[in-house]
Image (cartoon, rainbow, N blue to C red; front, side, top):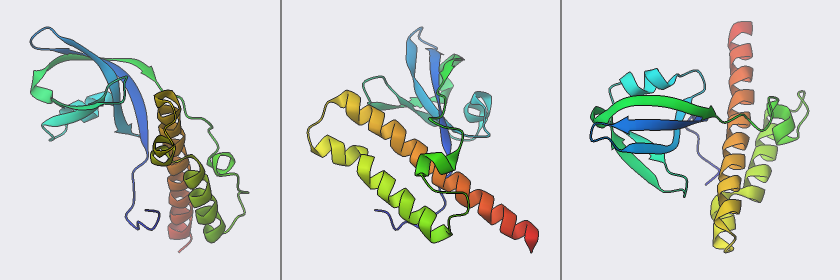
Length: 152
């Protein structure tokens, strides 16, 4: 579970209201890359977008059925400082950052909390915290790779 080597893209959550061709209105959350806009997502080559409904259910929605889209809210990150999220010093080694990331993620992993039978609200909150932990790790490691590349 923690040993994946693929690079994940950090995502931000947008609460949106989508109006469909048949007149239905869909309120939910979509995830876009941190540097991506809603219009970028709606105009890329994918035919469907995943929309997370308020109860946690994910629905694949055909882009061709969307007539209008509006951002209702953009979820603010828990902290702007990824080192604070992982509880490491900026001078920490890559190994220390990775160890802190794994420990923080293990402590609040939503699947683990769901298996304990905790309320859905707690699991939804844990999912958000886990996303922030993953994003913090990605941000730190991306910054370090960029620094190493520019120094070379």
